[in-house]
Length: 433
Ligand code: PLP
Image 1 (cartoon, rainbow, N blue to C red):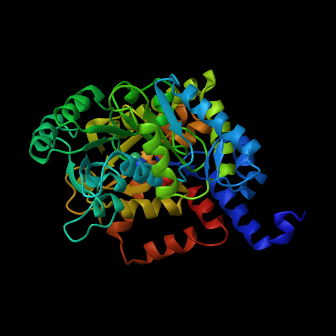
Image 2: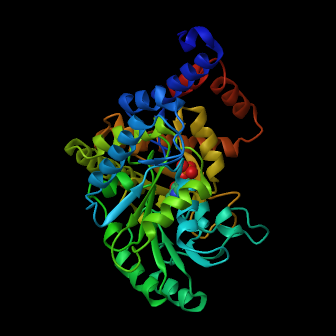
């Protein structure tokens, strides 16, 4: 046994630098979080060595006695974390990520070239919900299925359920997908169920972003209305990078979903499960079922609200003027700034955010907004007064972006970038100070 720092100091050094970046900066990427040391320990464990294609009790390899025990435990914890009855719901814990979970779910629910509807990417939807552009079908969900996006009401920037119902009457989808990567409000699952039922369509919720908040009971419950619920495990749920697929086991829709979902994950879309990841999911789900996690989820939302209020209080424009969940979408267009410009300036001063399209953007390539999330900062125990300071730092970063834009090409811009990028994060620290 030779530790990493001796056997590969080059990689160890990169890990050290990234560790410093994560802990010295302000992490505001809405799809990220800081998972626990216990979860990382499980993720980096000896379980990575084992092959176990198949399901507990039915594997294609020997030696899976303990892996079976692990996967059964993980499934049990997944149902417990979301308050589900094992007679009514089942779960597959093998998906490698949210995207593979979604593609496996589509494979299970509909046939190639069947029709699906999901929230359009420019309105906050995800690539895997049928995204394509006028030029290209670049996602598997639009290459192998016919897709029609639905969108937001341009006035309220909320999901336009009425228009969605009208579109669905023309398009007649076999599958309706809800859930988003950048939507700051909650979903009306009852309304979506009604629309799906009109066409005998399946209803699937992808709660990748909000699953921690759903598990804590802080948002509407998709399990009351949906046939399938997918999620990543690394966002608000605070686990390792992976995915889960929950499927209904009762009623007409649930009749054979268990087999269809399990077969879609393996062998249709994946090979051997990543058992180290399954152990890490199990560990994080135990944490998510603990009462302290409910407190965490409440604080994530309270922090996002304060962040939103502080920005609105400074005269900035947010999509829907605020938030119900962990994220806020900041529309920079009234300032004449693009999301990428502000993202770059924030990077230089140790604030990590991402550019994001906002409702009505002319092009998804040059988005007019940024997305901010409070999951990671809340994991570092930041509360409302801290978020007020964060809002002030963001305000200053945006003012700096405006100044730099005005001075583009000038000596001042060059000097700023030179200082900010010197040394090993030292320049960024100086600029921040
Ligand atoms: N679904 C939604 C709503 C997401 O936001 C994301 C990722 O951000 C995914 C699925 C894909 O997850 P992954 O990156 O793990 O494939």
